[in-house]
Image (cartoon, rainbow, N blue to C red; front, side):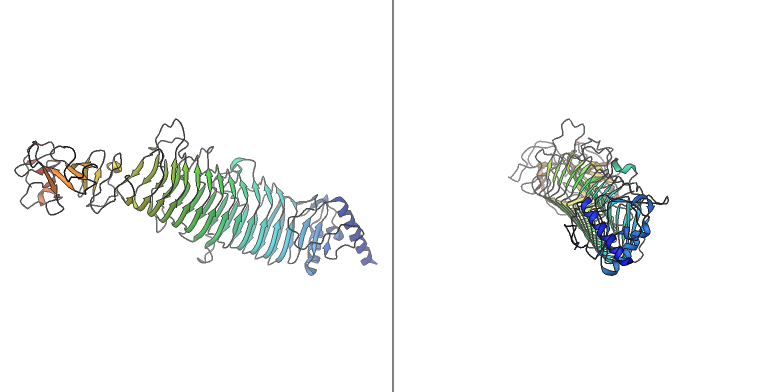
Length: 610
């Protein structure tokens, strides 16, 4: 008789549910749909009311819901929550169970210790959680083959934490106005093959009203083969999406984070970067793909790569027109290598468009093997920062700390009106680079520092040759700074029309004229005695040794023993010949020999002891 009463009670509850709700579910996962009350109820559906739940907002329904789950697990059934307010503290999901809420079913905590209903699962598989509403936190440990979808969560204090889980999906959930201000909102730790797709994580207050580093939207830590796709993440305190390695995992192999992708996400107004790939120990995070995302008004960078390798950043849109706080670049690459940045659209950002940065605390401090191609960069330094105080962050592409970089096919546009400070298209500080085919309609300056060893195609910059560099860039090359130039280097200062040599000290060798017009093998225009004349079209170097306008005033310099004597005066022992030049450390000036007398570069005869 008791069994018959239970059956009758289930039938009545099923009729009540179908008359009072219109269930909508994005994923049915095998649920049976019955449209007529006269049909028999499915035998694999179980209701907490059968086990004592009242769903009245005051009764503790925790045990009743758990009993329904325990029963459903044994037969692979579904636990259905009809409309009502269910007080529940902690629910333990088991294998082969679907926990589904009807419209109007709300979970709420019944304990002062936590405002959330906490759903836990350990070593469970083949389960589903769907269509629940309330303050809900989730903890899954070593679970597989699961799906969590269509939950509507508001004001939860905890997080959704997955540890050593695999083959699971978190899709189409709403997590809004979280009270969690210290932990990640969705956290995958040491997981594999997890899909996080179509979720909405949004807080009303910018940065969730917490400081940088707290409250990241989605954190994929020490995990692999995870896909973070089509999520909307707004106003989190930390990064919108973060790929990193959990330093608490001692096994270096297990700690690695690799082969993950962020695609099609929208990240807005987050307290750190929009999307970050980060390694606490260099290169333990690698093979991260960041494509087709929209990053708007994130407090620091739109996208950041920090100590990582083998990453692709492609087809993203980055802007930050209303962001007043800033870091180093819209796309910031720090101590990373083997990186491809291609086809991104960057517009209205506070500082650089793309920046490569020297790192500290890593074995390899400089970025290397970077490919920057086909990016559109418009209106960087939108805040009109002073280059003297913004650490050279006013460049479309800033190769501040990179080596072996290819920069091709990028377009640099500046349409901001009323700038106070100038901006640069490209800044090169050091390293070996190949730069070709970039479009610069406004002819924005290209800042070339002598530490760099590069080839530029076109008339921007001639190719560097060993020991001697002839530059055609406007401005003072390297601004006269020699702190990082190797001893023995010779370079040309376009502002002062002079060659400099770094030996024992910074030494002026001689003024030099760059002649771009002559093709005859002789200078196209006259120049003063003591000057060199380098012809870019013929590759020949001439020197004027005689101050008078007489025959033989120009002598072609052949790169042999009589070129430029770079020894100190106390070390010069050979007999001077016409054209010899050296820096006299007593006179504190460069001098040259005209065949008869030693002269300074004003033409005055001076007494020296070479």
